[in-house]
Length: 101
Image (cartoon, rainbow, N blue to C red; front, side):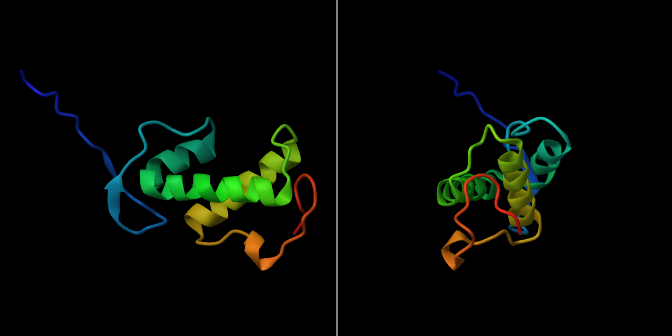
């Protein structure tokens, strides 16, 4: 029985600086989702997903709140493309909703 071979698409990951397996599809609609799809590897996006969970829990974000969504997208962009993002362990404001910088 022949085994199906799957082509793995690679991307030069903007965060990790290497050619790595790409995401299968944009993680969400819009220009940022397309940018993540084009420039971020599966590994880096998994790292972001873990970081996002940490931020949501630390700040008690309500993801139905547009301010919380905006904050998380801002953190995603900083984490994936600028090597940053706020560090909850460093003691940011434990405010409900989107914390202001």
